[in-house]
View 1 (cartoon, rainbow, N blue to C red):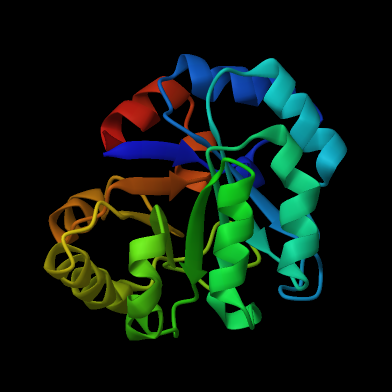
View 2 (view 1 turned 90 degrees about the vertical axis):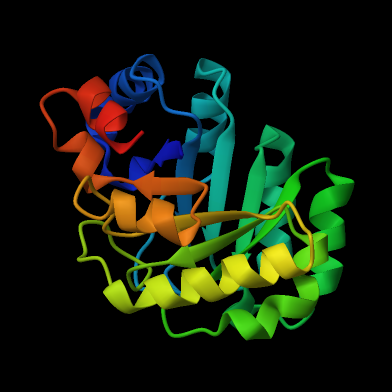
Length: 212
């Protein structure tokens, strides 16, 4: 199980400290939520902050776009060379084209699905994807409760990936803690995004270790 702490729950007044803490604590990726105030009712961070994070860490970045006008934001953040860029299928009219654009930047493409969205809607795109991000809360804010009925959806997605003999990874974001990590692992999840659970612990290293 790979762990990607979500900076949405970090202390933005001490962001450098918190980035160092999760890296020293053994995280595998740094999850960065980019929100535009339109696709979701929240605004987060832009290129200057992501640039500072990229310059200060050797850990790969995992950029999750929760935006309208996906192509604009892909081109805006691609220069920081994240490992993954994920975009929401609910907002994209031309997903195959956008996947190819992300690949042309040398970045691994991923599609994100809201809790109500069906995995069957992206089955034909799976061979083109390096990862699928399943939201287990409604996107926009940290600290929400895990939506348990996404687990059968994860299981269906895993079955599709196996049937197509693919290496596509499954990432889950929202309400992840030591209370549900075993259920997610059993369902076939490869990467978990965890924000509040990690950053609210007194010992970030132990929090990350408990998920692993």
